[in-house]
Image 1 (tube, rainbow, N blue to C red):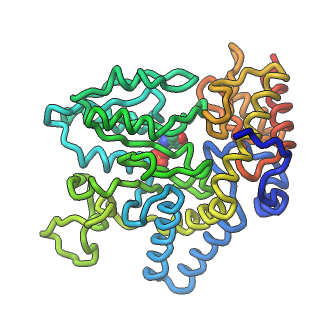
Image 2 (image 1 turned 120 degrees about the vertical axis):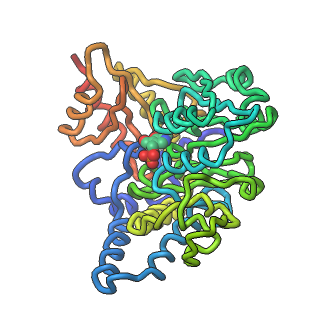
Length: 389
Ligand SMILES: Cc1ncc(COP(=O)(O)O)c(C=O)c1O
């Protein structure tokens, strides 16, 4: 389909922008790290505070918010609520999965892409003590070649750990194609979708992934302390995570210390008391994304991403990663010239009213649905100034 050329998105951009207070003072281009506060997330946090203040404890309402957050996440990735477990972070979700696997058999290789966020890779490396053998699937700034999977994934591979979108360069992977390759070798696929959730439609059923984790702090317009893990229902009965706790039980309120049973659904991957304040905010953030619509977010951020790449080149900047907007998430990373520190550039941008996300050798500019073309131009001008010798 030809790319839309319209200059405005399919939703009321000005109305949404009025609901994000930081836009009055600055240009937030850091959704790959932390999405800005919306009025709705602020009200949700306030409503938790009010409930706590007035009622001291209101578990029925609080757990209701948790369930609503679970339901919204499930909807965003094409899953049923019972196929989604709550976690406190993506790292914790990955640990829960790792703790459910047996690395003592013939299949004990964990094939980890070089594009994984370090924390996720660390989870797998730590399992070497349980017998896991970690092998690396090579990645470049442009992405991961299909052949790279074929070379590494074989009949000794237990699980493959692959990100949907790379946290630094923004390249994305075709999850259905990766899942097919991984399953052909009889292995499982764990996907870290933290950098893609909320930026495009995701369908765990259509893509056939086995596990998919994401948190709410970035494009889902929430805050830290909560993440979600989709577990393919066909696997649930076979897996008993050793990292466990009372919320992984069939009935957490049975209070039977001597019985280790397992919830019949994905909640068996849960551990302790759910993060109630974060669930309030997560619910609010995902409602916003739901209302805007992930297809609309994808279409608008693709256009802004193209403007970032082209406008960056016009200003003598060096964008990193694939040029094709269909092969990337909203993030456009720009390489810092020799001798220039990304953190220093980030500070200069802040001084100029642009909130960017420096990381390693690059400075990331990440638009989201609320970003305007003027935001893009202003941040590029500021970046060109900040990177000038
Ligand atoms: C792709 C990706 N995965 C995982 C993480 C870490 O998530 P958490 O802190 O929830 O474990 C990040 C954080 O930036 C990330 O970008």
